[in-house]
Length: 347
Image (tube, rainbow, N blue to C red; front, top):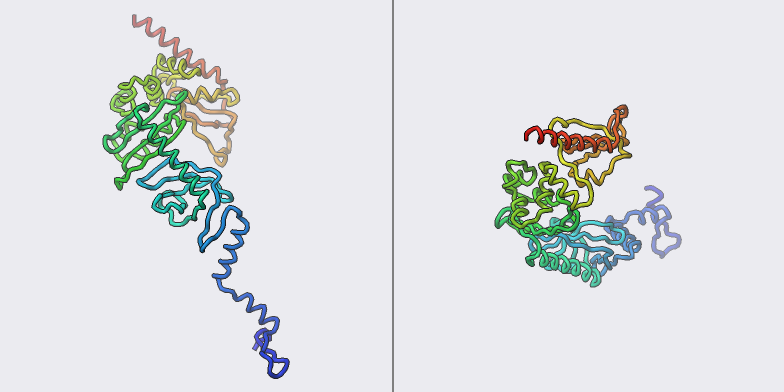
C-alpha cells in the first residue's frame, strides 16, 4: 500500500487519522458538481450586476434596452448588460420575469429583477406605441403582397425612411419589424429578405424600365404623389434620367449623378483622396470593399468606378494610372453636351 493511503494510530483507543498525502488526495477528489458550484459562485462574486436567489440567477439592471421586432406574442430585444455586452434576447409576457438568450429559439437565459423587468417592459411599450403611430393613417401604407406583407413608411430626411414591415412567415406567424432612419437600399433589402413570393421579390430586388410599373413600391409612390420616393426608386434601379437626377440634386442639396450610356461601360481608376463619397452615396453607387488579405498588388489609395453600372471597388492595382474625381465628374459634363448636340441634330 502506498504511504499516501496508510492509516496511523498513534495511541491505543484513538481513531485512525490520514497521513498528509492521503489528506491532500481526499481534498482533490471533489465532485464536478462542487467545482461547478464554486465556479458559479466566483462568477457571481465578480459580476455585481447579478445575484442568485432560490437557485435562480437574476440580472439587477439593464443599461440599454431596445425593441424593434415582434413575432406573435414574443418580442426581440437588443440589450446592453453589464459584463455581458450588447446582444439579442427574447421576452414574452407569458414568462414575464425571464429573458431568453438569442432570437426566439433560445433555451437558456436569466431572471429579471423588478428594475430590469420594468426596463424591458418600457422598451416594449415604446415599440407598441411606434406600431400605433405607423398605422394611424399618417404613414403611407403599401400592400406588397395583399394579406401577406404590408409596408408602412414615412419619408424622413434626404433619402432616409422610418418604416414598419408586417408579414406572415412560412409558418403563417405574424412578424412586425420597425426601423428608423433606414436608407432605401436597407428598406428594400429588409422586404426581399422576408418575402416568400419570388416573382414580386425579383421585381422589387431589381426593376428595369419594363418592370418598374409592376413594382409595388413604385406604384405606391406614383399613386400617393410621393415624388421623392419615385425619384429615389428610379435612381436605385439605375434608370433615372438626367432631369430626374437634377430634381434629386435640388432635393438633397448634393449633386446626383445619372448612369451614363453604354459607351461609358468601363472602369475608371480615381485618386481616393479626391473622391467626394457623399456624391457617390447619393447617386446610388454600389462600392464593394476589397479586404486586406486580398490586397497583394493593390492599394486602397485608388478606387475603381464604372459610370454606366454605378459599381465600384475601394481598391485598384498599384501601377494603375489615375484621374482625379473632378476629371471623373467631367465625363458627365461631356455626356450632357453630347446629348444636347444629339437633340439639336434630331430637330
